[in-house]
Amino acid sequence: MTTTTRPARTRGWLWGEFWRLSVAATFASITVLALSATELPDFKYGSPWWVVEAAAALVALAALPFRRRWPVPVAALTISLAAVSVAAAAPAAICFISLCTHRRTKQIVWASIGWLVSATFYELVVHPELNATQGDRISSIVITVLSTAFCVAVGLAIGSRRELVSNLQQQVETAASQERSRVQQARLGERSRIAREMHDVLAHRISLVALHSGALAYRTDLSPEQVRDTSAVIRDNAELALAELREVLGVLRQDDAGAIEPPQPNLTELDSLIMQAREADGPVDLVTDGDLDDVPETLSRSAFRIVQEVLTNRRKHAPGQRLHLDLTRHDTELTIRAANSLPSGHDLGLPESGLGLIGLAERVSLAGGTLRHGVDRSHRFVLTAVLPLHRVDERLDP
Image (cartoon, rainbow, N blue to C red):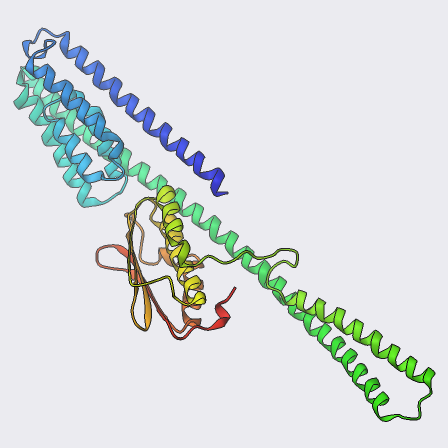
């Protein structure tokens, strides 16, 4: 699934960037050409203001692809450029809308003020000749206010739709996970029932073997034919008991009988896991302190699965947000701490709506450790797991 989804996601991202950049570049080019065709001397081809218009538009277009990684700085830069270049207005509007999709009130208010000031400054201060009459100036202000409201409305609508889609996807994934869990519990229950039934049969076979072998040991008056018959009974029951024992062991296996489980990953594969997460889901800052190579094998697998679940949690609930991940080995314990920002509109309980954190808590508890997670005052989801190095429960082995 990952190999098919990732190229499609990349193609979608490239197409989205291409058409937005094309629209902004087309608008900027038309604006520069239209200004060159006017009778105003400041906008003649090659004049200083013409150069400023074109240069500011190029800088704004170059900054456009970075609006998702650094939404606030890029929006501030492009809106500032629009104060001296109307050709930069299109990329600035796209960055403004992109910022509004995060639905953070303080950012939207400041960006709206910046947009209004930038447009007013251009029309009334930089080039007042474009609005020579009082009616022109009033019309310009009205258009500026309407464009601000339009950008905010579009951004909020896009942000709401993205959150709705994300919540629906999460609900589908949760329902599928619960269904898989119910199926697995049913399979395990049936296996246990079969194993109990076969245990009784196996005990009967073993008792027959013990009975007849005891008879051979104490009965010295048996004829050779009786000895052969008793030996055959012992042999037959021993073979049946062995076959049934194999069947019991097969039933008690947690995975499919025909599948051989590959070696489980541990901290030696941490770099590969982090690299895949960076390529697929966004930036990850990894900091390790202490020697992780000789961490006990079972504990190393548990730590790897904790990091794996943290990355999955970030992908589901905070896609694209920077994740800070610290692994610190002390003398007696291994500490894993992860923190990432949450998109606007995500409440405190949202990251716990899946089953992953419940499984993590169980795994850490079996290892004798502690797990804490929640949202801090900076609106970041923070998870801290502490695993003791010298108390490893072998039940954690998969």
